[in-house]
Image (cartoon, rainbow, N blue to C red; front, side, top):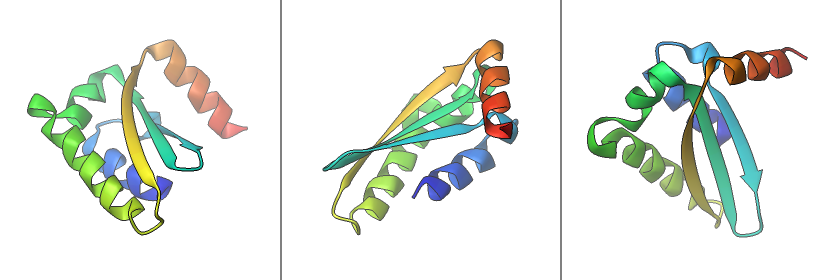
Length: 91
């Protein structure tokens, strides 16, 4: 499921290397936290949040198969966070 979120988001942004997806799985709910560069935040959210809502709908539909609900959170990163997250991924 994380791969699905990553594929969708990376297709939308100008800087796919800055996309970081964190997955937090609980008993009933899985939370997908999407972090993108500041310049790409608007592309992921879309006009009036329509793109973000579409992403949430797709993830909820896909997670229905597993019997768990899923939540998607979208955050933007400043330049320092992007550099730190990229270094962590390289390790």
